[in-house]
Image 1: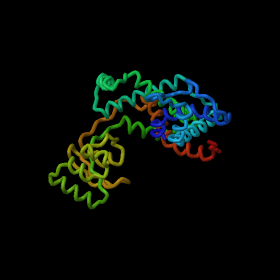
Image 2 (image 1 turned 45 degrees about the horizontal axis):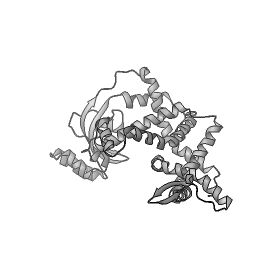
Image 3 (image 1 turned 135 degrees about the vertical axis):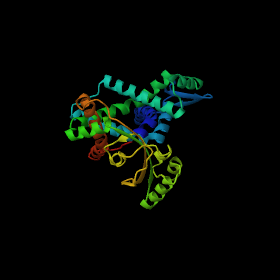
Image 4 (image 1 turned 60 degrees about the vertical axis):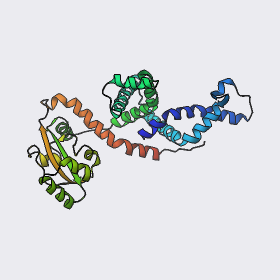
Length: 307
């Protein structure tokens, strides 16, 4: 839901603003002279009215706009039942973080390391960093309010156990393994790849060519660091650097790993990071519950589209 709404949010706002004026004009049934305030665009002397602009937006993006508006209203109704609101400070904090994240993502995609480089790139396109940031925040405002309301409603009933906190500690602060992998569909294929590796084949080339996990394959098989306590972690924890694992079967396929290095865990105790662990566990549970909860909420709501 998030990606689709963000792409069309600005358009949605414009179309929603025009709906009321269009409805009033239709109800009146009178042909009135176009006022200057009703002109939104003028192209080579041709004037585009607010009504014409609104009708175009509704025809082009109305389904997406109405879909989001319905979801927003349903969530707001549920929030009122729980006496839950979102403050200006909460909105501002989340929007600032979201804007920072989008700017960082933009820099990464453009291969830029410094904000000064992005500012120069924007300058060449006639846009300032401040203007771009304001546009991002404007486009995310309604979506952010919706997200915060959903989170507050669900967090009221999220509970966790000591075991879950311990698992989160091991995963986040425990020893980490750096490795690369090749994932195959069949054990036979995995055996063939392992034989090639032991015969001196280049791991990165084989990963790029054969691995069905395309995310790590693009990096020559390099994986994100993972806990020593996971299934894969336990399977390679006793390997020496550059040594290959046996074939490891998971729900994703048959893995052949090469250990890069093992990194000791943090020296911080469980008690020192307890607050962070509670946030991590709550966030994980929240992410698991959001979509099923929204689906159930929308399905039990009575919605009539009259437009």
